[in-house]
Length: 88
Image (cartoon, rainbow, N blue to C red; front, side, top):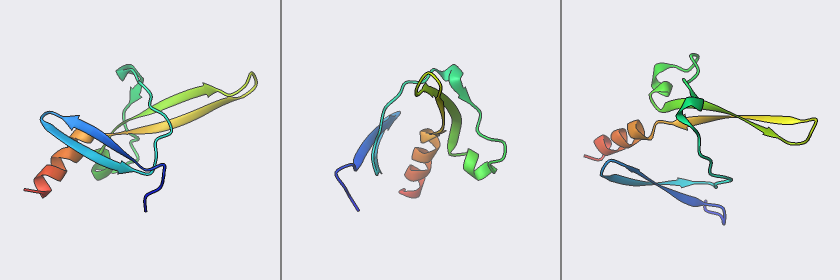
């Protein structure tokens, strides 16, 4: 089901352009490659094939409180390659 928050993210990899339908986007951030950690070792090989890495983001909520978020970076290159090979 679509809502007023539904968005299409357009991604380009090489000469392929693909859209991803997502429930919503709360923010867009830029992350330095040095801040990206390897995916969790506890993920099995199939899952790590689609996860590029993890990012830890700390935000100061107030002087006394800090909030940490962990984001998983998906490996769009592998996802796009698989989508193309399935549609051939």
